[in-house]
Length: 89
Image (cartoon, rainbow, N blue to C red):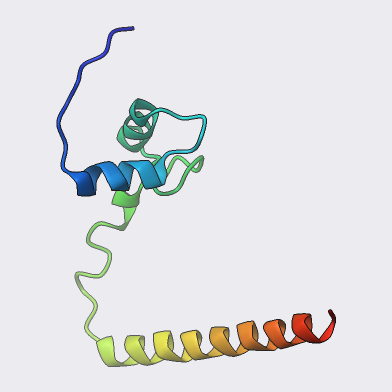
C-alpha cells in the first residue's frame, strides 16, 4: 500500500487526532468517517445522520429550559456522588 502526503490545517489535524485511537492510523479514521463511522465508533452510524435534524425546530425556549434543567440535575447528581465518595475515604 502506497502513501500520499497531504497538507491540512492544525485545527483539522487536532480534530483527526482526537478521533484516533492508539492502534489506528489517520487513514483508518478518515476511512471510518467515509464508511459512516466517525463520531460513533463501531455503530456504523456517522455524524451525518444528524444533518438537518433541527431545521424545523420552532420551540427553542422549552428546549433550552429542558437542557438547563437536565444540566442542573446532572450537576446535582455529580456533586452528591462526589460528596459520597469523599465521605467514604
